[in-house]
Length: 85
Length: 216
Image (cartoon, rainbow over all chains, first blue to last red; front, side, top):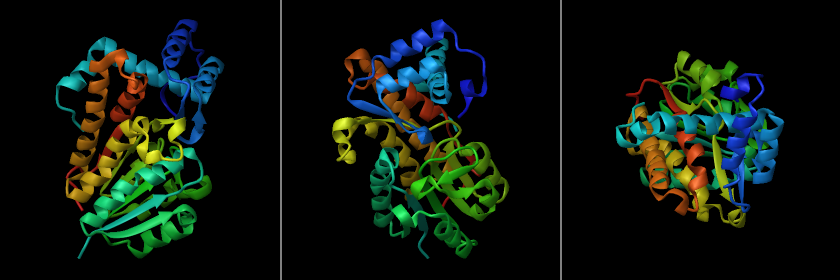
């Protein structure tokens, strides 16, 4: 695991709420396979975020990276220009 | 002399079960191109057998595809037992590697390239994907999983088609990008919109180390 999970700093309430709001859009009929951590339902993954355990912190890191890419224009750059290695 | 694909396909939980089946497309391409195939499935995906083959074929340039769980230091085989760890990274010398496993790029991948792997394509974060519960018995019909597993398959398929390691990674990432772009355009009307963040992360963290010009 990497990113947010490397830090032991508490995740802010606002950030957790933002991530959970996004996770609530996951349908009930899917499971999420988070690498060697296993498979999780929506409810389970939200619970992990609330607990700020390894899985929860990785989910927050992942969502945050996407939202930052969206807000800074990096995502748009990636979608409109050539991807490089 | 034909090229060789050595692929590991453990199958001991829902995640590896999906990778096991989705790797079928890689194997089909391998057969189409006349590659020799060494397919280590289920119990055959064990350390003794895998490392034995690598030792026996130490001088041969070949494609090694590993599916399974992993971390910074090792990739697992059947039963999540380590298949290869960073201490054995030198056995990947002369190989082009695609590791569809979590985090292995961080230590195992770097060490493999330092010790002679031609190229190592993998992830420096967990490889994440979604599965539809109704499709668990028919994984190849799972359109949600396809968003993740079709682009990732394309690393190995591109290498088998003759593209360089760098180009194979690029072509795979373009497939991820196309899925992200479509979801962004469709927005909330898409039933798959919730996957966009994880697709973006898999795309951004799929990295090629070593010689990007290396080919089979």
